[in-house]
Length: 288
Ligand SMILES: Cc1cc2nc3c(=O)[nH]c(=O)nc-3n(C[C@H](O)[C@H](O)[C@H](O)COP(=O)(O)OP(=O)(O)OC[C@H]3O[C@@H](n4cnc5c(N)ncnc54)[C@H](O)[C@@H]3O)c2cc1C
Image (cartoon, rainbow, N blue to C red; front, side, top):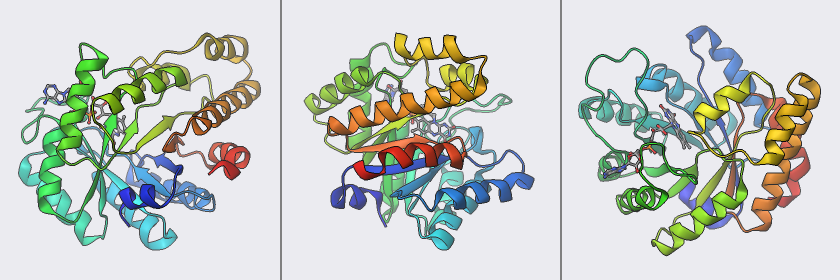
């Protein structure tokens, strides 16, 4: 099922993101986590694509497991980084053969050990989107950044480029994680003014451990952390149980506010942790 059609039938949409294991030996654990989450009332699940294509086989394996074994629509990520046009074509053929028809088209970032050409095929996600769309039979999503992508000079310039991606065929957007809902509302208004009318799924990452704090700052590309959020970190970072509980409560509060402001959907960065997803959905379930 195309994810764009899920947004047409039902709003708000609830989705989760999972990532493949670094080693094949970790695949069963990820499939176990995905299965545990499948009992929750989600509309689709997305599977990331390792930097530079590492673990791309497992992206396809997890996506087809979701679809075939758990009957959950799967969104497989695909990046431009280090992929030639031929490699992209091969990956698309693989996805098509497995019946995976939803793809999140991304530029990707420079992997640690990359000495070759960074973008041998497509330079921007918009070019990849256009290429996937021209093959036919795929629903394509794109990433967006409520507080501006780090490479862009301004939010307005970034939204200009986002419009190019949507005009190239992106059917829906998923945001980078953010902790300040007001920043999201400003971004959403700017998108509407720019004529970006596709659904925007809001990305929420619950803070569940002190070890995650630095990673969140990097992964979010410097998303602003409101003082309320920073106070939670400073007060509870040495108390794992309290930090987890407060982090989940903060995510729940963000979600309730987003849904009461007519957000198209909530995309939870689960970090492959079923119990965190269960706790959040347990509170907000009836809002979807
Ligand atoms: C929801 C989500 C999921 C992600 N999943 C993955 C994953 O699975 N694997 C992974 O490796 N990374 C992933 N990322 C990270 C992502 O690859 C990086 O943030 C990357 O830096 C940008 O990717 P993009 O697709 O947004 O790029 P683009 O849309 O290409 O934008 C990148 C930058 O280029 C600018 N730009 C775009 N088009 C043009 C143009 N025509 N001319 C000039 N400038 C332009 C943009 O404004 C932006 O600053 C994800 C990010 C998000 C938000």
